[in-house]
Length: 31
Image (cartoon, rainbow, N blue to C red; front, top):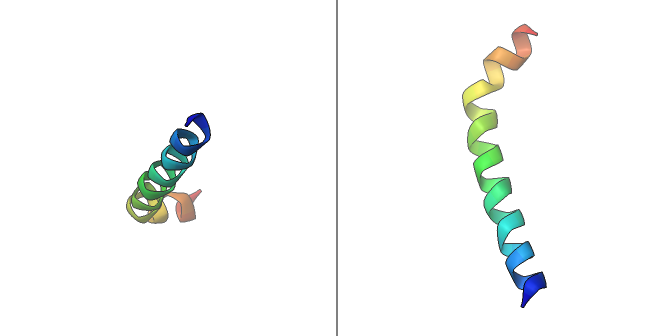
């Protein structure tokens, strides 16, 4: 069961990360 929870957390993290990347793409290019 523990491994399943970890896999689910990884998927959620990737989802949030993609949204963050879309919002901060321009700021990163400035750097």
